[in-house]
Length: 511
Image 1 (tube, rainbow, N blue to C red):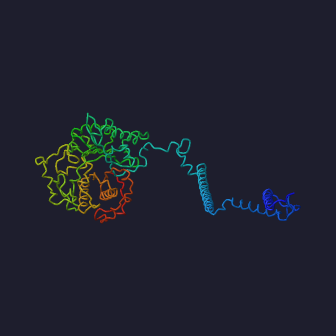
Image 2 (cartoon, one colour):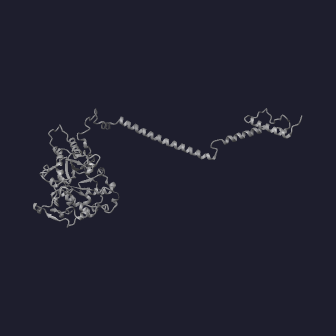
Image 3 (spheres, helix red, strand yellow):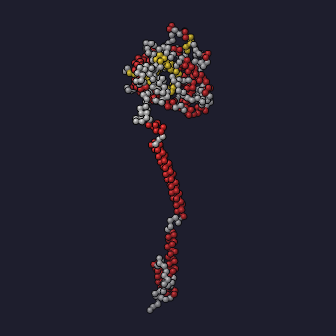
């Protein structure tokens, strides 16, 4: 038999060794198995391979493979794992806070329900008082609850008809004055700011006369306890029944043509005894005081024939009533100022040349002044030029003027000495005649300037503020909006009409 080649035998033995190592990688070496395996074709020790080496090599290979497949063994994966752990921790903390808040809210809800279900004695009574079947049944309301808890304030609702709810919006905040601009067309009194804004359903009757009748009927119910009560009717404000509501009617078209229609429109209020009236020496105040402005003719207001009931009053010219602040400056005659002197237009106090006085005894029928036309505007229509002493409480109620025309612009944000003297002199002249001082066309922007002007006017004695912003005027926190005006020079109230932080405004007064 031919002897195998040594190289061939070596390769064959090596192949058997490798195959056997792979096939026996998961088994353990038996004690009965020899450590040296004899080749079938030769007994030469050279061809015997140690089987334990193959097993060790296979185990090391498997271990390295398993070790490489472990997650997180890669260095690049460690930051990602840490981020995930931090995210889970933050999520757990957030959920814990939400759960804690939910528990607190649940406890509050349970506490509220316990209070509602089991209130103490006094709270239980207050909660159910007045309800049917409980204590105070039928006693929770009053016949005059229309304006319950509303405090009247000295403000005038300028262009009141423009508001979303005319008349009622002003009463809701406590304003004691409202304004209606009227136009005569087709024998009807229409209300609006201009001809283009007029509509058939907006009339003096539908917006003011009719609603006022309804309000006053609620405020003056028939009392069975005193069926024969003849006392003066109560006004619109339940908190102050004696406070009158001023209806300012602005005549836009010819005053003489409008006059008879206004007298006719007021008849329902007059028949109910609701209008303030004068008998020449005494004023009987009613729930409603009617004042004519614009083209209202003064001579028709002051006439026994055209105003027999004396229940329509005039809006006199405040700009012509300046009186010096000293007692020696009190006039005993009629001022001849007409349309305001040049000094007034420039925001200065009138000079001596512009304040000529003439003895009233010299004004007679033979020396009568020129009558102004019926379309001269507020305080001038149907008046005698310069005859300012003709305005008394028997024929006039307001004394008004445009703030810009009479006082001028506040260029540095405050009143000058001349403007303050002029302001005080005009208010003094109105009050000496028993009239209510009122300025219209007030600054409305910036808000800080507007509030500053309001503050000064109230402190100086203006009786009604002419306002467009009802809530702003009645909020009583004007000093929150003084802004940079307060930081300007002259904040001393006595010097330039500045701001006195120790005075509250506005005050509640009865007019």
